[in-house]
Image 1 (cartoon, rainbow, N blue to C red):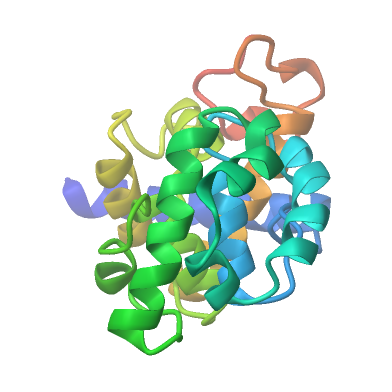
Image 2 (cartoon, rainbow, N blue to C red):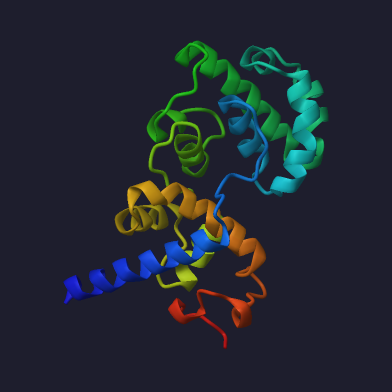
Length: 215
């Protein structure tokens, strides 16, 4: 019985991947950055903030603080002034400075390349760690942001809102080489079609595969 369900799930995943690839051939993170530490900083700033807002803030931020050492030595009040509009700026500034200090002291200035090591950094959870592992180091990764969790549930790929359980479930059904791009495409799809409040099921190319469709 379980075998049949898994075959159907595999076929469904393949179809979803194919459709999303057609919609978004260039799957990439929407945060702007020029090096791994900048992506780490931008991702920390994106917590409870839009990527668009973060991208408005980071040009001046990265001009002022150009290296990990600059962030590690930053005056907190000045750092806060650069990121104030991203919200939770005091906590984010404290985390970013501590993160830079730990990268220098524990990792000799190099960003670690595993989820396990990345999550030891201040303010870095599995979502951020997976993004770095996938986008920077090219390893299979599953970034379970709100779009990923919402859409995976709607499509019937999982039945939980717990980020770690969603991550583990998607790892078990996605081809490893597709997992990182799949999550990026879900973000774009979530913004364009499958929004939280008013999904556009009438125009959704995944409607036939979706048990939650409202048409």
